[in-house]
Amino acid sequence: MSESLFSGMEPASTAASGWFTAHCDGGSRGNPGPAGYGAIVEDPRGRVVARLSEFLGRQTNNFAEYKGLLAVLAWARQNGVRQLRVISDSELMVKQVQGQYKVASPALRPLWEEARRVSREFERFEISHTLRGGNKEADRLANEAMDKGMGRSVARPSIAVEQPVKIDSQQEFEGVIRNGVVELINGKLPEGTRVQVRVRK
Image 1: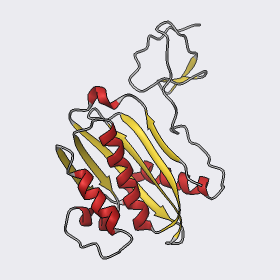
Image 2: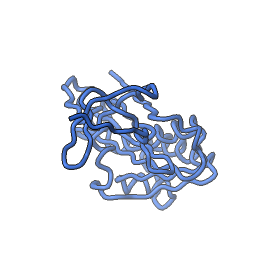
Image 3: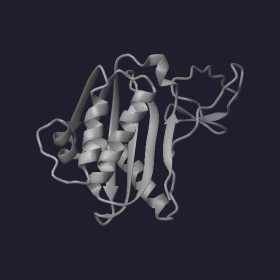
């Protein structure tokens, strides 16, 4: 079973200049074992424009980490991104792509070669390491992909991937105010939507 998710919240081609930032993560339960990756991509204004994930079958942690990186590179290339910054909690992969570590694994070398080749197509490319706490949403998506691939039900939190909502300029939504924040009752709005609030007593 394989499921891939390329979910654009908003067309990236309209704002493909400037630095896009991607957080990617991969994991394996058993190493090797059921594996998957997850990633999010943010545009230069910090808005999430894509969430990517895929179940990879039985693979190693490092294989899954590279597949997450390659998915980010493919999405960025397809959407005309010219400057890309990738953040990963895999120190091994980051230092291999940076050229600091050699790639001894025959299984990883083709993935490393592809990552190096595609990364050179961008005007500017950076990859850096973060601790696991700095990659929480990518980690969540990777674990969801593994759960789904293993036939486990996935409990979707409120920040789960959703398709953009087309909104008429005069469409009305009902909501309630909690702690000074309007929470919608009957729908969701894309990030950055301008709204006018009318209070009904």
